[in-house]
Length: 333
Image 1 (cartoon, rainbow, N blue to C red):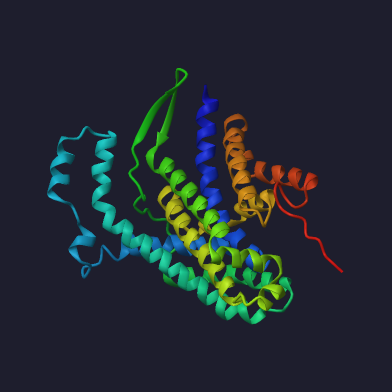
Image 2: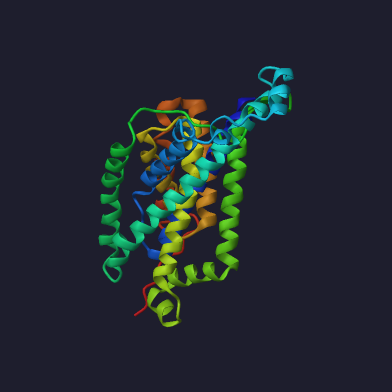
């Protein structure tokens, strides 16, 4: 019964889509601007993770605890562990913990600084202008970030350490074997936890209330004493942090390469399907698209995988123009 295997694979992919989509929705809810460059911000986050987790630790001047941290008990336990077992995978992963933590911290901080620069010097001066002009800035950012990447990093694909151990598990589902890789499963858990935390924070914190108020009416939010530029900066920071984590996960799964920048366009279709202003709708759409892609790959082959999500989005938009759970805008006169 391969159906269960592909559904599980689709759910794991959908959770990653949802993590990426958080950034697009957060920026749109606060600024009413669709960030077309979000995929390329994820690409920069992936290269930053590669820099801090691989390049810097391998430098001659890097501290020993960062470049070759292998506790004696880990080395001894690794010798006695069965090859390709979950225990062996765990002991292989433990020495990479300093690299992973250093790389993830560097990616999040670096992506956050980039997001603050974009918001402060590119987006904030356009406050009061049409949304179209701000959207065109994000389109121009695609070329800028792509060129920035080429100046600092080569275009060759490179591997980076997984955020979690990556053993292969074999489970029996009603007599059918199902194989799950640990890193993919944990990435799904991490993505779901981050998504849930951000949604809870937006609904119950004062900063979240401010973001929701600004998304409803910026002028009224200003008159109520809300610092709208600060809300914009917070939304871009959310997009940068979640994008950096997603970039680290993607780079560990697929390798670091410029093609990661194109990933954002696929997720943008998912956001349109779920609703640009609905976190819950986007999460549901991400899971549906993830499962749909897996089933299409199973039944029709990889050629149709890239087409299926867009067909699904077109069908949903024809029925519900604002997405599954998006709210229609009502213009009051």
